[in-house]
Image (cartoon, rainbow, N blue to C red; front, top):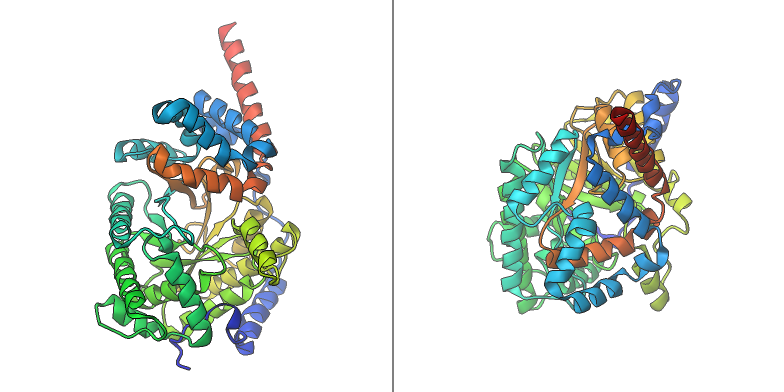
Length: 470
């Protein structure tokens, strides 16, 4: 099999032992050799409520109100039904008036470019960088036809334009869901096919370039749709290269191998001199470490730069239910603690930071997490291995409206911090808000610390106001 053949998902051969020993062994020896006393700033304890000084009183009160609602499991678990009922009772306009100043304003940047620019301007003043996200994605049974996929491509190109043309940050990023441009059914079919007969990345690159190629195993109509999808992705990548870094999201395990195949083909074409296309690795999956090592191996063999978005993952409930329904082994680690351990999030983090320490111009990572321990670990490893805070190879990321005590503290300490920023109308973003609330319920219900810090800051302002008025 040629180096360009993409070996995806559950039926891939094992990661070459030589690569595994070299990456993990080198990382371990370097850690032992350079271990130094803890000298990180005490502020990375993320205990300082003054991080919220940059927020207005209204923003503090809104965050406290929204987080209080999110602390009730019954509300989070049933938010989709509740929002549907509220929309039916209040009507579209009334529902929008209720949602816009509250949940929508907390987690969404705005509907049009003027609103988005205002939100991004505030974010820039806080030292944070936006990572725009068009909240379009599909699952099986939701396919929408070529015209709608073309419309989605136009929305993605607009996202590239806004990310690049506005001076919100010096190194702009955006998120992209492949299922906005290529049907989930096609991704599932591809996942099955490449497990049996791996596709060569060059085949996809040729298709992106407009060449009429034959895709093994696809019927004529399927092949035509795949070709259209690849060319849509190619247009977005062409518009973004040397301007905006495009972070491709991972989705469900039954389609992720196909998403990775397509993303690696984009990397092969566009990441020759820098990491402009990135892939996402979900560390709640038991196979996440081997997937990452395989990507490193492939990037070396093919000579392209690798960009990695490292997340814990957000589709846990659905993945577990599906595995149980189909009598398959649960692909998710059994506990939060297991996800954090050396064989998953922390292990992947160490492997990538070690690769970056050796070749900072070839590898990049965004440590996309709300977990304080992982953030501190990343900062510590950067210090141990001599990776510059502002060198461009490592940055951090959290969701807009959440975990601001971590984001603002990191920015204050000089680390590049991005916030995932969805935008669109209330109707457009409602599925996103519902899905995020349900998928991140463990995060939403674990925001007690942020609520406490917000209350401390609010009390501080009230005392200051009373002293000033006396």
